[in-house]
Length: 231
Image (tube, rainbow, N blue to C red; front, side, top):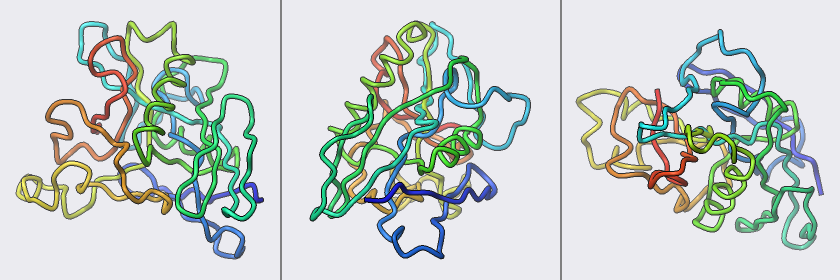
C-alpha cells in the first residue's frame, strides 16, 4: 500500500493536479477527498483571489457549499491487498481495482478560502482532491461535512471538490450544447472518478458558463448535500 502524493499545478481557472511521473507506484492515482471549505477548511489567507473564491452563505440564501477535504490523506491499494482499516474519520471505498480512504478534514480555525488554497492542503497532506463517485460516497461526504460544520449549517457552508469547467463549455454560445449539459461540462483530475453518479446537482444547476468550479452544499435547507457550480 502506498501513501499517495501529488503535484499542484495552478492552471487558469480552478487548479489542476498531476501525479508525479517519476514513480510507477502512483499509476493508480486515487483521491484525497473533496477539497476545501469556505469556512473551516484550509489555510487562513482569504486575501488572495485566484479563480473560484470561497464565500460565506447567508441563512436566507439557497446556500451553495464548499466541500473540503483539506488535509485529507489518500491511502490506496489494489484489490489483491485491500486496506481494511482507514484513519479516524475516514472511510474505505473501492473504485474498480483501487481501494482508498476518503475523509473530510479542516484546520482548527474557521476561515474562508479559495479552491487553490484548499487543494494545496490536500497536496501538503499527500493526497489529491476528488469528489463523490457514487451516491454512497456523496452521502458520506455530506454527513461527514455536516458533523464538522455542525455549528455553521444555519449559515451554509460550501466544500470544494474536483471538477473544472471544460474550455469548450466556457462561452455563452457553447453552454447550451448537449455535450456541455450537467456534469458533462466538467473535466476531472482524479482518474479514479469514472461514473460521476455522485455529483447530484440542485435544481437547474450547473447554470453558468462563467462558473468554473464545483462545490458541495452543506446547509439546513433542501440544497443540503447537492452540488452547484461556482465562479
